Image (cartoon, rainbow over all chains, first blue to last red):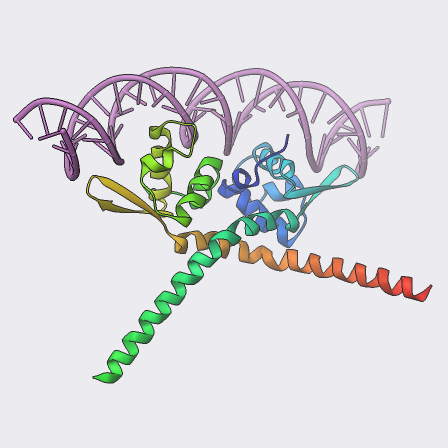
Length: 108
Length: 108
DNA sequence: AATTTGCGCAACCAAATAGTTGCATTTATA
DNA sequence: TATAAATGCAACTATTTGGTTGCGCAAATT
């Protein structure tokens, strides 16, 4: 099943998983040790993340290492692109306000 | 209730709402005209987006205009920051591969 | 060969969620 | 003032989701 990447990062546990795996590929068991929930619960999250290709499997013997796929994560960034101009504009406006405050102070 | 912004953008309808309102502030009724679902359904989505401060209200008579709050959206971008280096690294690696392919071609 | 280990899958359950309908409130209009 | 319009809120329902337990399979270990 093809999953929605936005739905995938909606869960805080899954976001934590991504942060962990981004720094180092991990097996489900190792990963589960970092959380309070059971291995199967973590495994389910891994499944969701794999189904939207944020994670990729690498089988090594009976272990499965999950790797982070940054290219997929980039899709979020690409979606954000359209809003970027908005917050940059606002930042510049704030900048202008601060500038005005300063010049007013100088005038006194 | 304070809402999780990641959970807020998980829903495709809410993402569409954000795109629309980002270009122009809108009332719930006007907004609902852009979707198949009922006004109340859209209104619920607006509520979620407002609760996590992605939208802000501006009351004008009996109408309520909802504005986009880019500063809040920036939080997503800040979270993505930590992964940015990963996809940039991969991009550079791909770049290197293409360079090598080229130099190999030249050597022949 | 028997046992242990790592893992995925299916069934089940409780909580959350998206959607609907109905109603109350406030503001504008006839 | 009576009515219509814009909106939020509450109750209810169907679906989704996060979690658990139990099972089966394949690879490693004894």
